[in-house]
Image (cartoon, rainbow, N blue to C red; front, side, top):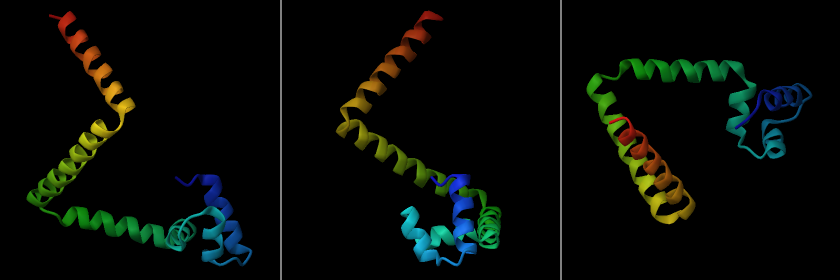
Length: 106
């Protein structure tokens, strides 16, 4: 994630005449990322375009997109649970604590 200080530095470098590609190499990000953060007009248009697209979607489209996102997220969490012992241990501890709290209240 790019911080506000980094964005300020990017803008200063751009004003000093560096190309977006050179700035990207300094920060280890793509030229498109630099363009997005340095050029406020590009950022504003991107946000506006995304907002308009969200408004145009019907409730059915929104539900379908959410369902697709949710299934990908669950698949990712299941894979991580299988492959990462620390994650599995953390989830198991959370489940034990959750059930313990709920059983105390009964």
